[in-house]
Amino acid sequence: MINTSLQQFIKKESAWRFLKLALRLRAPEPAFRHVLVTLADHANSHGFCYPSYNLLLAETAYTSKQTI
Image (cartoon, rainbow, N blue to C red; front, side):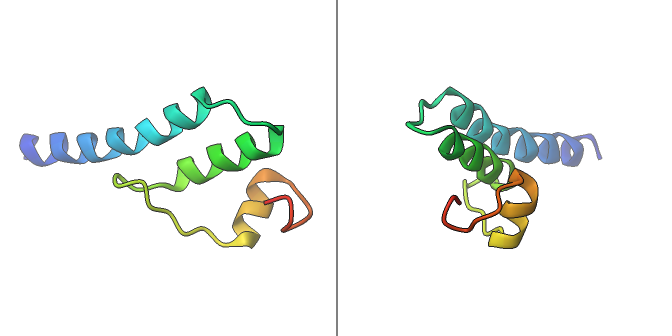
């Protein structure tokens, strides 16, 4: 039981590395960084994520898919 809980924590923690990386990167436009942080928030432990444009628009409060 403890081993399973530890494995779940490690999986969750490894996804945080993408968020930490996104926060450290310099982006030419603030929108780039904002979208990157939002994508990193949805990334799994391998760095993959597939949020829809509608979800990204809702979470970033941008009004255009072109911004995303």
